[in-house]
Image 1 (cartoon, rainbow, N blue to C red):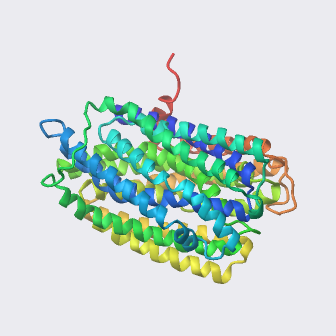
Image 2: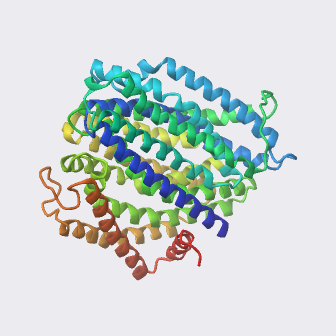
Length: 539
């Protein structure tokens, strides 16, 4: 447990710095291209394309398949060195091929995701795509190296190197503002130089992020060399396993495609693609710091126990991880929800834009706890080499997301379309998580579910006074008329006050949450204290 706590603390610290610098990156990007406008949505679609392919590579192949295979290869005489060299060679070929195909299909991809874009917006999005799509190769390289480091229990670098990406992007976007001015939300003002500076900056950051990770490779004790002799090393088995995960992620990408196509109806006048991406970045802050940072070291341990067929240890690992993660997720989620308006003011251009964006963030936060639990449960299936079952329960989520998206398009006003789509995604994720937990419980012969539900119930009860205290603080700071577009509460007059207001409101909510947990005598608080103390400098 000590090593897991130390690894989680390292990942959490790195993720925190990475997410904070990522938020600053978004703030500067918004200053460059605006919050609500056609140019921002065009860049949002183009820059999301390599992320979509990266999701297929990482979730569909690396996390689900490669880590368990690397853990197994550790028993080879060379510690898995030859096996990993073959995987790296194959992966590099795949990444290059995927990048080339995406570049060829750039105009079609932008049109697919932006069916309601104007011709000028499509042209701008396609120009951005040519600059952004090379990120695919470097995203893939970064993920392959990083997941291998995680499998070898070298957890820190994978989390810390994105900071370099964010710093480079911040600098590049500031150069853009210095050269061309800010708030370039109109499509007709863009020229090739402006496109090159913005798109090139976004890609340069990913390149540096991947290359810096190579410096940590020596800590694995493995040597890499090109090896094209793929036959006879079990790649057929990997292909079978990856087939299900590939289909699963493709299904998820279809759901994302439908969401994007639906919300482009509101592009230019109301929150749309770019605003949803910014809100998602804020939403991902607690998820990344707690769910990923705590869950990733557990996944390596779960994979080891699954390889040894120690189901009792897997049950204990999964249940313990869910309880510890949920403690942090519920507290941070309620704090962020009551501070939604000042939090969104940080990455918007006006108080009115913040009020418009806040419902999107809150609707995403509805699904924060289910998504965090799913992260753990899904990886338990992967640890046993089962990629088919996650595909099945993901299909349920995908079907619900698509259905909710079209329902939102039919009934939601354009001003709330993005929020309605986000809420549909959260509800779909909740249903998916319930199904996944029940299947895993049956598969493992138990999952300490009564104890886990009791713990989560305590966290929710503690979140009620925390939320009321945070909301009261929000009102006391000048937001006495609720979420109305005309108001200028002191917590979101400008970006700086938005950040300060978010901190104050969030701190009050978290302190009350912690106090309520102590009153309720939640046993998980001891594990939480252990993780928190690892962030603090030693005397």
